Length: 101
Image (cartoon, rainbow, N blue to C red; front, side):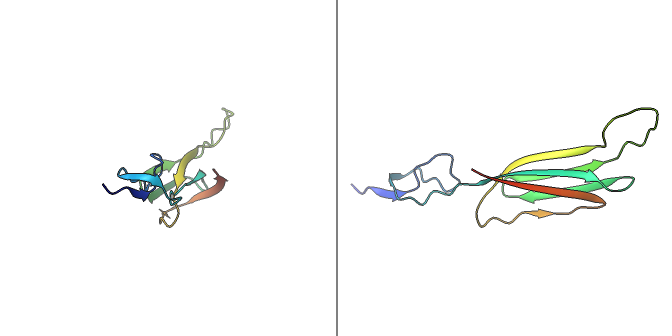
């Protein structure tokens, strides 16, 4: 019988179901908060990465008779080490905050 070593944490993206002993190789992500707000009369954006695909359209509210905030989208997700994330903003302001876990 061979006992394998590897990541034994089931919430890690490199979890090894066959690992019997944890070798300390588990990866842990970073919590990301991404706020998107239109900078003109409208805005569109797309964000992609491992396990993440989101796109949206924003329009600021310019009605002088009604008091309310501009349209803002807030995304929360976990980013993983060595993973590529891309964004395609069109007329939007991206505000990124990183929260280590």
